[in-house]
Length: 43
Image (cartoon, rainbow, N blue to C red; front, top):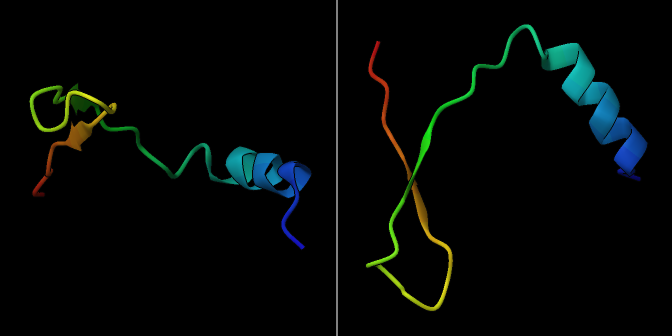
């Protein structure tokens, strides 16, 4: 079973591998919800 403790453990193990990407707010897509777009990074 997936527990919060296992999620924290995975986060700790992957912290040097995973890179964060900026999210761009897009309120015009649906004003009633929080919509964010993730930029596509081509490398």
